[in-house]
Amino acid sequence: METITRGRVYVRVDGNGSLREVVYFDSNNKRTKQIDLVHQHKGVSPHTHHGYEHNENDSAKWFARPTSAETKMVERVRSIWENRYKR
Image (cartoon, rainbow, N blue to C red; front, side, top):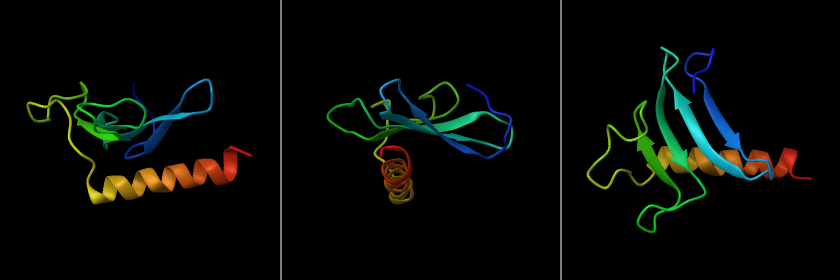
């Protein structure tokens, strides 16, 4: 999954209009992290995977709990989606 806009954050939406992931890209157009919103890892949802290959920069758990900044981004994304697109 690449992008042509450096440093952009994208949100993946499934065919049913549900938010799936918040995906961050770096200045080299490579994915740096992904916040999964739908499925759980060890009961944690949402959760974050770091790195281009999905989890090469995570702990032995293969995921991380969202930071406060990531949680704010998820809240912002959900608010925008609900207010603008889910009429």
